[in-house]
Length: 327
Image (cartoon, rainbow, N blue to C red; front, side):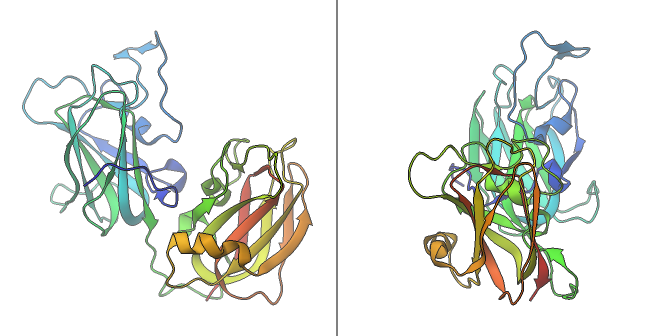
């Protein structure tokens, strides 16, 4: 186990927009367990109190006066491999837990039974108040649930579980058209040249963008060139239709875009990123408009596993849908 920086090419499997939810807590007297996985950064609001005491943005149990410790259970949005755990105690100072550990299991349901077998993925580790720690997990299996243990009590602002969605494609109907890049199916960002205002993961998130912050947006480019983001498809396939949505982006949408793609096998994410600028073009430069869904059909497209979205010169895109069939 080692502390590190969160890997931006991994997906937070514990995010509500994928269907993740906190399904159980031994105690959440001071702060509701559901706040533990909220997507927004935790905040502190001075002088905000509720009927139980100071309002805190996270999960907080009462002061334990008996033996034992508190824990809560999170159902992930989709089963998957969990490679990193982030424990954030922002704004918890005199009320943070001195230590924590994390277990995981694979269970088809909301709340695992008492006799459920759990696997340790983060051994007991010391925590600090008002801080953030990212830890590499100790087991590479596929899991559906996490159980965060805090010793003995206290408050945690956020828990993130970074990994990759694990999906069995063996019996999937290859005649069914799907969004090949969909986050909920296992699509993920590999990298981009800039994400100053919004991350590329938002491009492939479920549903419509809720505001301008719920998209991929780069800073204003002041030098030659253009911005780009590379995505791994959930499964290799043939892209038949492209939907590029600039919803909410009005004075800051890209002037144009084009899409590249190829089949990558046996390469690391770093190697894929290095070669992406030379991939074949799937669709030539197309003019963009503000706050608009742009639809395009492709013909004679080759099977691809990865794509590179290029926006010229910069700006924001809300969603990218790549409709097609798996191969």
